[in-house]
Amino acid sequence: MKAEPINHITFDDFMSLSVVLYNTLGMHPYDSATSTAISTRWLFGIFLFQVINLNFVFGLECTFVYISFKNSENFVESCMVMGYIVFVIVGELKMVTVWLRRDQLNDLMIEMDRIFPSADAETQRQYQVERYLRRGRMLTKGFAGLYLLLIVTYNLFVIIQFLVKRYVQELPGASMAMPYTSVSPWSLHNVFGFCLMYSLQSLAGYTCTAGHASSDILIFAVLIQTIMHYDYLSRKLTELLIQAGRVSDGYQQDLKVLRHLISYHNQLLRMTEVINRVFGLPLLLNFMSSSLMVCFVGFQMTIGLSVDVVCKLAVLLVAEMAEIYLICYFSDELVNASVSVSDAVYNMNWPDADKRFNKMLIIIAQRAQRPVCLRATVFLDVSMQTMTMFLQMTYRFFCVIRTMYQ
Image (cartoon, rainbow, N blue to C red; front, side, top):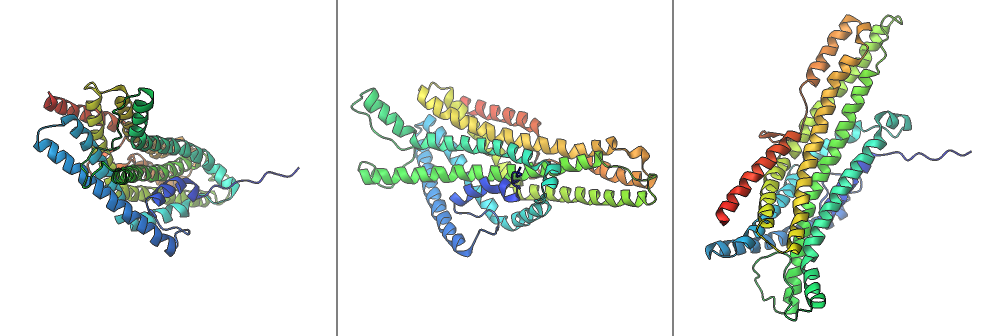
């Protein structure tokens, strides 16, 4: 009977979703074999157009908020637009951050690709690559689907609302509106002007949303692989068969294996530091923006808006909460995986090893007892406890806005 071919998993399989999202924005997040000079020039043109359009729409929204506060009117609508403004600022800053730190990101990707388990089936089974890929895809695809639902909801909401009013409720005065509230430099009372502004706003909404999601999915893809390496190191330490006292050069064999594992652990620690340098600012922006967004959305949902608008806001609220939760979840998993290395040292068969070998074990155990986690720059170490801090801070902002409204 002919054996079924084994599908070997590659480093690119983990990164594919984030790369596709970045490409729709006109960006290569890092250098790869498929990024030719021609495709890079085309992508840069797409990127430039989308960024200009995003800033154009952003300027119109800022103008609307300025006029509203100047005239002391439309407070609720202004809060909604301020939420959009925060979302745009952070989405653009996350794209720019990846662009500016592309050299560091390239070095990180090269290093991660280099230590990725080889295409050998047995090696990949030892690393349990398929299990981590399946888990990573489940979470990242779910997250990407949620953000896709978010942008589709916001871009098509006014169309569906108009169709319901015109053909279901049969309201003769029903009219179309823009997906996002802003001023307009031209008249929207003609078909061309209306369709042009609608298209520009919808594209800007996608650009901003994809800028958020692509950066987060890139972080998730990097973290799931880092966790995989830490878990593999823990298993290798636990399963290490001590040769000292069994064969003539047993101590030398043990020492050779341990040196390799210590070097591997040092590699992972250095790689985690690079991850924090590259993604520290986007992470901090995530927490700051999501806190404000959840606050603005929560405020709007508590002031008696229509059911359809509340449902629209609920999608945004769930997306923002899911973003922060997944960041905290992956960082917590990284903490547990890094600390488990110390537990693996204790659980291995060290009593049978040479004393000199055991002294070297202390080095790796001491280093592993310092948890490794995501750091949102120097201000915040991310874990599941951060989720509690995030909710507390959001509630304080919410109370401030409610007080201003009353």
